Length: 435
Image (cartoon, rainbow, N blue to C red; front, side):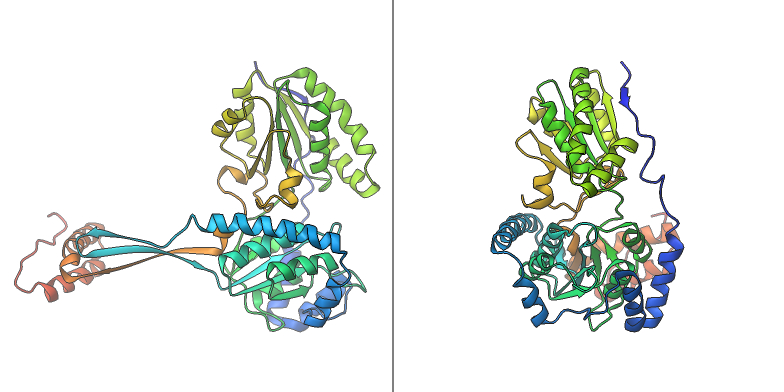
């Protein structure tokens, strides 16, 4: 049967897309020309903060002293999990070499980028976990310099818990600056910082647009949109757990889509009845976000069977994908498009968002169909090298000369010709394009 939408989204994340491009482009251009002074001007305007933007060691220690010991322990716990998972990821990439033909060696090296800029949101919510996720992976990758950048609160500065997380995870500098101006400062190497080779981390639409515009001048993790989450659930799922998990992700923002895909109509209807009740029970700010996201962006889809459910999920390519269904191994083998997968009721997106070790900086808006999320590999350049003996280069040179001439690239061909003539002066070679 065709998919039955019990609830259909009335908006998409692009429906409320502001005309931010020109604004962001102007700010970036101003700061590129005006440097530190212009960045500080924008910081005063948007951050409403006029304190020290590059935190001193004394300021860092003072902020750390404000963090409760229990929270410090939780941050250290999450950091340890993220670090160990990143180390395991890094071990999957190694330097290798092989003999292409006798006497001709080609190889691969994994080299970390020199400087990483990690943006940590700190406006509506203090994203402690984002500091852990971005700084830790850069540190494990081996980046020489890591800047953590987070919006300061007026008269206060960067949230102390973010400062502590960035510090223990390995940030070399902490920049109290938000939005486009913070991204620009890391990109252009302001305030004595090295120019970032890569920008990573989530942010609002202005941060996302700044990264989009700067891509090419600097590397980025991905172009991110609003957080999205999909749950695949069958008749074995607990409707209350499913509804709670949907609400937990809808609170991210007014335009954060959440989707339920199921083959059980009764479950779908129970969940639809529970979600508004759970939203009403949230604190005010969280309630406003979740209510808008559920009203305008959420969808509930009933499919005929699990294969159709899986196909639907792969089409949506969600950032977060949860399976609360029987036969989890089948789903693990079948599903192909997601940023991060959460198998079974015993885990949840919230775990991955905060403390399990897998990264929460993930592809949104369907980008999971072609890329994964932030990992230690994002900071690594996979480069190649080669060397050869003269004898080993002979067959390579002959093939290169003939292919180049067939393509019409005579200069390339002559770079091979000259070596054959120098190394093997007494031999004749047929290096014409037609053989």
